[in-house]
Image (tube, helix red, strand yellow):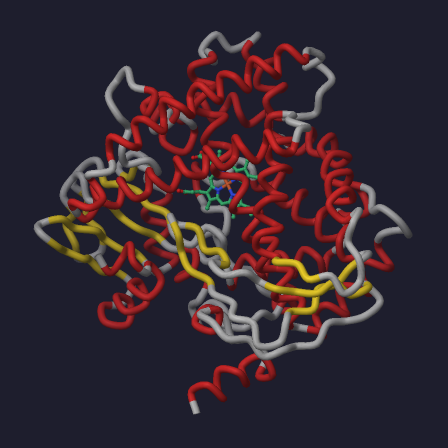
Length: 459
Ligand code: HEM
């Protein structure tokens, strides 16, 4: 049970005691953990023996649970290859500029009422904002409240999946008893997604609309296999994969920038010189090298996707271990990115390191690696770059001194679990590092001024 309760603490203690390969066993149930780049490579490049099982509980053959979990994240073999081929076009680099206007427009709308000195909770603000943004980019939803309603339904269902799935992993009664509730949630979610499809089609004009669902509807014309039933699974899981990952990355990046004035100042200089006054355009943002380093470093030190799992579908050998079929195998972005042999001062936020750092695909993998690497990675980078550039040209955030900032893994996702209170200051001022409390200090080494609160409390 120590794993679902606190995945990072559990993985750290396993690695400290057993090294880069460890196994937890309880009541005959085993979970294997790999912590090194080489073992990541071994697992992630062998999709024949290691299947993705993002949703452990698939439901009966004809259940809504089976249909809504039948998206890219949870299919394997030829089914995965075919679905990935169809979706590749939707996320191709050439279509990315068409999302720029929506991202800029929504970010500007978000800031329309912002005023100097206002107190914001970065965590809550970014989660709500990215639910709306994801609703617009993926499904063309312009009604923010409707996006939130649908996003919340998807989010609750994902969390319930992880609770019940974790129960299957550790054979715990308290988790498995919630199975019926999960099926009920899946029934309701399927109806909501179908309703969203209906609204989208009724609005018409899908040939011109810049959203992922319009492109998927168009692909239905050429791909006989892409039925509405399949699209329900793809739409649900893509939304689930997109909104919290981007929201948490934004919250962490803004928090880290606020606590590292030297980094914020250098980034401001770059934004001033590489984006013309006013709103940055798509092409300009491709040349902001330091902005990319900031985002990469934020995703290294606090990766929103902190771990993922595969399951061995045949008996396999991993190092000295013989794993029987059915053994879950966990690999972790957080553990891999926090290795001193790959990244010097691994716990610190040092964007400058990216001037020389050239980690392999298995040493640095915020978007995963191999044949299941995040299909939305380029879109995510466009969102992050654009939102940060538009926001930081106008505003900086001053974290409230003495705030408690907690971060924890919930359902594989590492995000803030407390509020992140911060005041708006004009972009020509740089925020000061302030002392904060909370579990953030277990995750990243902040500058010493940020740690004085913790030292004082311990004393
Ligand atoms: C900062 C933002 C994001 C992060 C950190 C992230 C991370 C990841 C990771 C680590 C995986 C691989 C999981 C595994 O190997 O088990 C993944 C897969 C996936 N991601 Fe993302 N993601 C992000 C944004 C997005 C966005 C914006 C979309 C879509 C619009 C998206 C859609 C997907 C899909 C569909 C998959 C499944 C790919 C497959 O199994 O073939 N992600 N993501």
